[in-house]
Image (cartoon, rainbow, N blue to C red):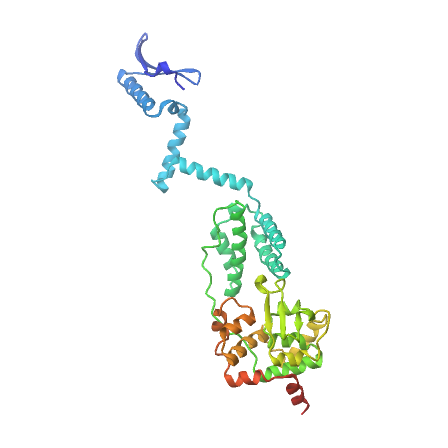
Length: 383
């Protein structure tokens, strides 16, 4: 940095044996005297004027940069201007430092996955949710686990989810959701600024009407269930609208025949929202003879017996979530009250009802469905 008393460059003529030069003395910088020689006085004056102008415009800071630093800055400017003439070197430097720091503190994608899953466990997510996360994210980490989180690109994610040509649209959608959740967790932790999965086009998923059973099929199912002693889980789905995951965790003490209600606690309800299901008379007719005082509703042998039921009643042609779908469809057709059906099933809005269950069955079928009392079904078998 120049001394304050050397603000004006001094030009001295130097005479040599066979030549003349002009020396520009700009004073001391960083403890060293800086002089430059030129063959002509014009060149010396040009340099001195440029030095003086830089001093007047930038002060001492102008002289903190060495010539190498200025040349490096010039090359950087040339590169930046090729991309965006509006960018400044300062902006680029700050962005680079931010990315550099992020990369230094960032874990690998595999480590981020472990942090994310552990956080979900601590938040009390269900085992089924945790297992699904592990399955999908472990597969993702097989390809990118050793990569630092900021090094993941949108193209990498897009290529990953599209590599399986046989993957169904719903599967691709679900994979993108889980990867997106993982990367959002990385944003919250300060490892990245952008979710590389959020702008990837989602495949179009065709809306499907809910698969349901006919009244005759439900009747055959209930007869087989009675023979195999697994009636309770099935009638809770068909006539109570409970989800399979809720039935699996339900205790007999959650069912009150006196009040005519089933309590779905927040611990087992989807969305952790407690709800009370009002029992229809047909459901009570099936539960009254088999109601227990303690224990879980689902027996340890249920899965084995259920597989046998599917073969016996429907030759293996079981409709996924068919019992709950039947409840939604036949309940709305019978009572014509979308709010009531929505609340019974634990939905937040009536959208699912109108999109999947409405108009699947008529009033005659609905009346027959809600007449499937235990005695009616079993006595018709005996007859």
